[in-house]
Image 1 (cartoon, one colour):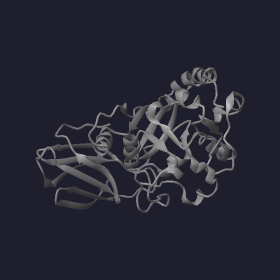
Image 2 (cartoon, rainbow, N blue to C red):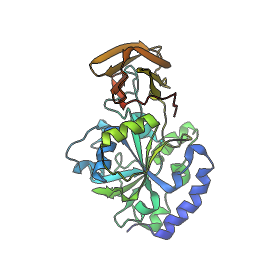
Image 3 (cartoon, helix red, strand yellow):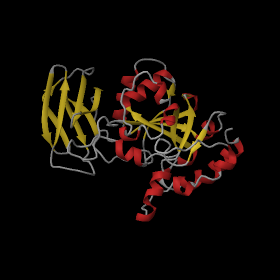
Length: 314
């Protein structure tokens, strides 16, 4: 039994305005979140649904904690959405980390895409259930109905500030509370496809391919969706056939220089450079349809056409 429409409306009325006061939490009270690597996002969008782990013929980019896969095998029969972004899972897997970073796990979401679903529409589906904390790391049975929904501690789930050492483990677990739907979930309840930058949105649309895709694409603003703690391309354009780009320094395990490889056609160059704004005179390609590829620390940060325009930072 799903929760009632009235209970879903009550949740949104309570938490929507409370969270919207903060740019870093805007929309959380009305939304559910599913993050994935850009290639996986393209496959989901082409297929029109998310399929549970046990139902997917092949995993394109398995970013799950491999050591925890057998903790609760039942979780693999559900499509899993979080009540909020920026939880421990995202912190571990999001963005390009240096090869020397002890927290780097391969593969990881070097280009994360966030699928943002309408909370009310999903939670009121007949098959929809919910879990307090991390479903995959526990033996919980998914809960249902208004009475059990009332028991969820949303002041802990939506908590987004520093915590004491005593509270840390509990709060981190509550931030990973989930809504789960058996087997598969249609994208009919999808509100937005959110990318970090306009460049990554362009890359995603290239992977998605031609077609009349009826999705609302958006670029994150206000820091409400992604951590942005690792490396990614923040500026990208061409001028007189030369590539101009900028990439950000990671928050953890930083070092003076990083391996950057740029490819265009049959030309490719490898550099050790610092995070900054760069111009690449070694490759000149005035073709507006040329495909450029940028890799940072062995991970693809962008691949596709680069517009001949002035600086665009997003």
